[in-house]
Image 1 (cartoon, rainbow, N blue to C red):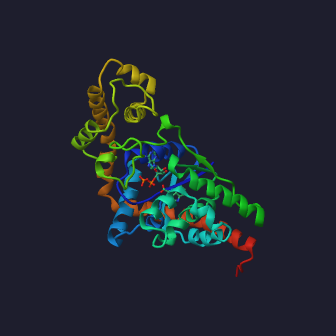
Image 2 (tube, rainbow, N blue to C red):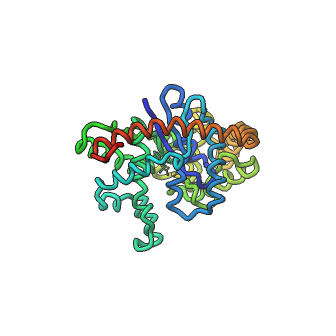
Image 3 (cartoon, helix red, strand yellow):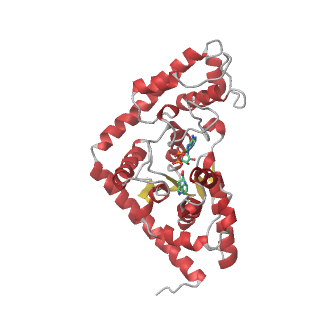
Length: 330
Ligand code: ADP
Ligand code: TRP
């Protein structure tokens, strides 16, 4: 299957990004044709300092390789280094009703903060560029966390609409969302009603590269629910259920097994054990990251190779699209 997914270069990747998305990418690359990219153009919908953006784009490539993406198996590249998605996004924007974009949850939330008058056009257009990313590479499967499902629905609609108008061109891409137990929505450590997010305060998220003391402290301070029992019940005990999912995924034991293990113990010993587990499981990632950090030229070479491969696929699709919709091709 042809698989593609993207991730923004802002903020350090947290265990939600890893458990909900990146971990699945690492598995998928074993027997699929995979494209993974750093979505720097999407990041521009929020104000960015140019120097910081440039550094963090490279930094995120280092992190992705440290977390397990393998350049020999996957095409790893930076979104803005391929011009075609912005061209296709323009074309797709002519077949999407504005109302459909205004109903997107992410747009509603982000534009509410500023008011519709000053929210930038990129926020509204965000899912159209995302659809262009997906369709341009004739993607069949898109591994994402739960928060991106609505954007994927739009990509599917646009693929169908384009195919209907201009003839079969794009496969209709499938969202590949893990179950809650498999990490689709890891919650904030401080407010377990919300998802863990890079844009929230540091104590609410656990970075994949944090040092042991910080890991222990954040887990010890994680907000839990009233009561004493360690049981998986996302509706009534979102805090403990979230920690159970994290424990289960990093220890590769089922939630049932973890519940059983801590049946007669209180929250404190459970959190202590989780802190130690995370310290142990995250250490190899930190080591790999430190090693790669010293090899920036190698990372640049990975991105250059990725750009080459992605570009040739993108150019082929774009030629086909131009031909189908009646743009000149000489
Ligand atoms: P964030 O929302 O933290 O800024 P991104 O929007 O860049 O992260 O998301 C990158 C990938 O990680 C997406 O596939 C997204 O669905 C997934 N993801 C983000 N937050 C979580 C979370 N808390 N739990 C599970 N998956 C998540
Ligand atoms: N919007 C996605 C996010 O914030 C990133 C992204 C951009 C993406 N283009 C994509 C994800 C294409 C999947 C497919 O997480």
